[in-house]
Amino acid sequence: MTKRFLGALLSTLTIGSMPSAMAQAPVTYRAGAIVVEAPWSRATPGGAKVGSGYMRIRNTGSEPDRLVGGSTVVAERFEVHRSTVVEGVARMELVTGGLEIGPGQTVELKPGALHAMLVNLRQGLNPGDTVKGMLIFEKAGVLKIEYQVGGIGAQAVPAANAHQNH
Ligand SMILES: [Cu+2]
Image (tube, rainbow, N blue to C red):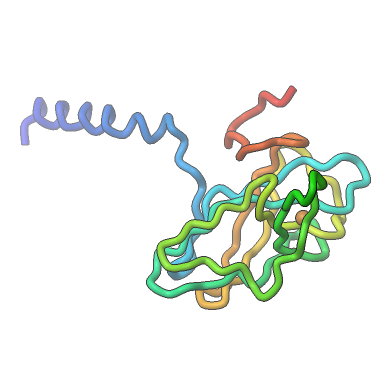
């Protein structure tokens, strides 16, 4: 292999890898056929007793699985809720019996929809915090994850290296 060829190869590789580096690939966690992408949470106002958790859960397998539980270091309990609007009033209901993720399906936990509820917070959550937790799937088992905490009322996953919270 000549030096010149190697140089050309390296520059090709560098150029080729730039877009993905710039697009900031989401943080992913995997257990068995389950892939969890970009878990995040929101900062909580002082004295708040609950926090929220959002993420995408993908089932790459050929059988359904269920999110049956979880925990975080900051709260007593982990629940899965569904937000609905009934006659103009926003409500949340507890999802019981586990949250099913069908084969090939991606279930998104996001503001105003399905979400994890971190019940009885032991501490407030601040922008830029990371919160350790775990998810329990019926088949895939236990998956350790970390939530990136965005600002109060954030609508999307915070940028990993964002120090621009105003
Ligand atoms: Cu809730």
